[in-house]
Image (tube, rainbow, N blue to C red; front, side, top):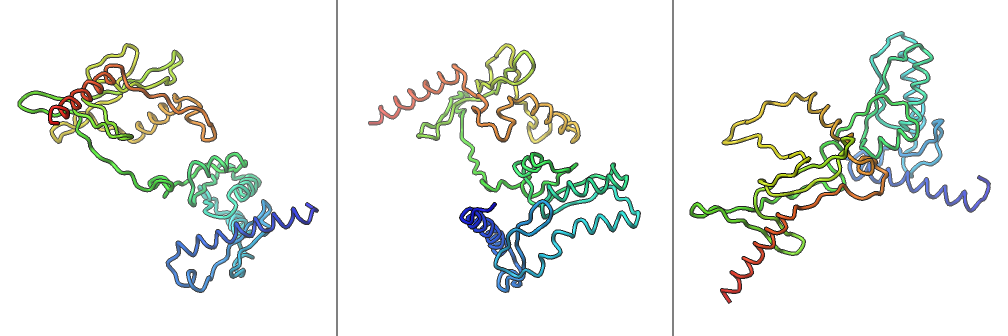
Length: 287
């Protein structure tokens, strides 16, 4: 890059990124050494471990960053202490994993795995794989149990059936954007001839759709389990098998296709309108 204007633009961009990294560290730190004294370093490195931009903080830590992973790998190789695997937790995971994999292979340790962790989620993992990272396993912690873009989930139970004097009556809510459908329901899943999922239909519990699989199954009744416990390994395999049958546009993180199709059955829609008319009629009789 020789154009001075373009060079200045990229310098400012990279410096801003390093500054944002430092700001995020200060906001989340508990130690006054970091929050007040700013005793930390933030910087960007290229694939060879060279510093290309640093934040306005203490640079004394930066000298060891590019060499830490390589020094550790070289030490265990020279000591002949073959590990089951090595873990990368920070830095340039793509570049460091590529170097570590090559060096381990060179030492004849092709079966030593390279494991990575550190604020990983599906987007970051997908990005690392596209960059050619030589990583055998990923450790996902916070992102597995906390959604960064929606850390809380509001759940409200709504009545859909009411039994009064032995008579069961359907109930629904008709507020704009908060419509709830009445009656007990079942979710029916249709599949293509090749076994991949096609669509879901939410219908009444007593409805039957030939060729569709009913998804909802009672597991507790009267406080007691009604089905056998599921083995954790078996549950994992089932999850992967079911996921593989979803449409490609749903499974691909970069796809911008339509959402998985889900609709309500005609009978359920008709019951909703019947309850709506009943409620409107009852409200009109009071006026």
